[in-house]
Image (cartoon, one colour):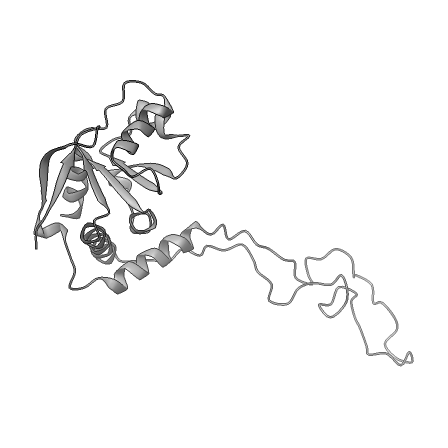
Length: 209
């Protein structure tokens, strides 16, 4: 099931081929794993800072608002009861973590499955080296234009962060730079094109085992 991808230079010309080993590909299983990984990623991104006050936390309400009997009204012990205007909130949100635990093996399976689907769909682009003459945005845009990926959102993966590449891609709308070790299932599926440097793809496949 091994796949072969073209290796391009910074001008978009083919300079070689990259053979993806079978160990990095998975199509027989993993759909549920991908879903679990994406749900867990998005859940962990939630701030979880929503907070409301209970009747015990709302200020005031210490005195009984009116006498127990003789008024014709329902008895009340506090003006901060949840059924009163200005009272506490019943079962309101409190700060919490939405993080979900996903087994490491499941995460690894999900990443292989997501990567395989992008390979089959032809959305993986391999560039020999992302050589930039300077840290200017137009230099990075020229390379991505040559690779024909700039018309849509792009995930660019390298083995390590390069200061020149970080500066050059920082102002490009829809372009995100990631280390191979930081790639996750959600971003693998979110972007229209995933551009790997050859060394970055080597590191990513090594991570897949």
